[in-house]
Amino acid sequence: MNTAIYPGSFDPVTYGHLDIIERSAQMADHLIVGVLKNNTKEPMFTVEERLEMLREETGRYANVEIRAFDGLLADFARDCGAKVIIRGLRAVTDFEYELQMAQTNRKLAPELDTIFLATDLRYAYLSSSIVKEVAYWHGDIRAFVTPYVAERIREKI
Image (cartoon, rainbow, N blue to C red; front, top):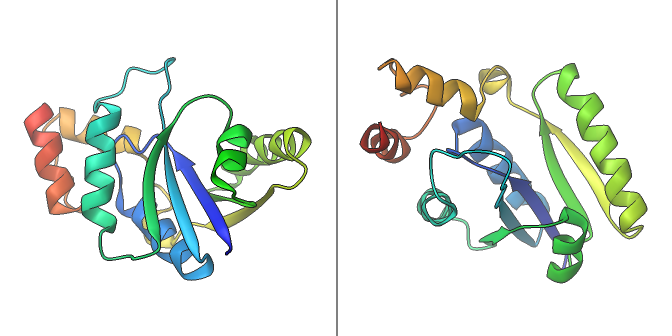
């Protein structure tokens, strides 16, 4: 079985994330969406809330599993039996950082490869940070997130 991991904070999950999940689910037999517990950031949503939103949004994919993790991605991938990490790239500026991470993960776990997926042009500008900023100022976020996620954000704000 070909297992891949798509890691991120998903705070909140956007249409850009969902695009990468859908495309990755078509490539892998088993896709694990890894929700990072990052102690250095102050998230809008708890890990449990992010897991819940992702499960709601990806329930139609039989081969997608949503799991939380902390620590090194290489260790998480090894524990999951994954050989592939999926990362979305919005712009050239993402590539430099993502390449460093891919090379570091490869050094830590030589059996791991990273696949970069170019984000759909409709979402190339989109980030969770932008969604939160627009929502905070009561802007319209319907083009960025699903109605379910938009409602969850409105409840938080």
